[in-house]
Length: 421
Figure 1: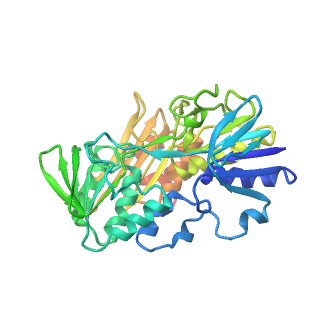
Figure 2 (figure 1 turned 45 degrees about the vertical axis):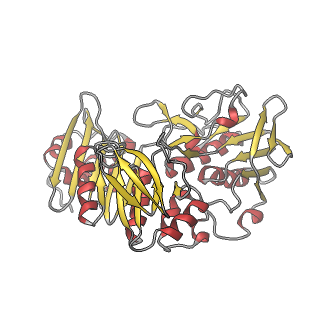
């Protein structure tokens, strides 16, 4: 069996390693289009502040890791797919055939249509080359403007703030991390960042960028202008599905897959940011561009590529955990709530503590927390197991901090007055 994986990110690497364990005699090849060994984009911010070197971003640290596993890693770009011949065309002029193909090409950053957005000195912090350029310019005292305060943007924000740069953040939505946090939580994160000396503009767009000497003048929709030595863009990503244009493999926002991570071509699978996989909470098929989902997809795809029965995707739980200059926040599942559902909320603005629980009937379906980390595993576990809370639901609406008691009381049938935490 000849397995070819296009994409050297977490989904592709995990799939390759899983295939090697499942089929010792199979041929396993990863094709990645960057000159470095497979690495994690999520580790790039740590490189910006010298917490890790470039090698610290590598997904596998051993120099001979892949060769020891007889996994061939090729640095090339796939430019064509012939489904009938089961053949890939490579940018270097070569080609390769496959029996099973996994598309794990991830996503790429998108840029808004802003005059000046293509000027040199504007980076996305998406590749190791981006990381090198940003690290060389984000020095103490440098004026840095960050466009976008979503999940990826806030990871970059953490590193830029720690670099000692004079940081300004511009977010077009009305709060920070709008696809992860509600108004209260997003507002608290903004307040926290401002307390740490970061200037944050929400409900604001960048409308123009002009080169001025070695730096920039950035015009905002408010009419204000900001001087910057460096601009980092984190305004969104889109799945890399262009390879499939004209091939007949079905796509939507991402590559459409079934619960076996299989496309409409039985020999082609997809995983990671590029795959439109099943969402655990809604049952719908969406793109979830987070690393835990990518690795889960990779494992499932490998099992099905190897022909193992029972490798059905039950859906990925929407899960985000973020460290924003020391303030830990997280959201799980239907953090925005279910139609007709109930909720419980506890807020201490002065201490930046917040907990919001969302219920559908007596089942916890979503949660948001700030400044509280001890119950993160329990929150995810209750959501993923769809545990019926019974009377504990009303107690949690009254006091959401009793989540551990509720977990023990619901899963171990202990009484209301049991000695707990």
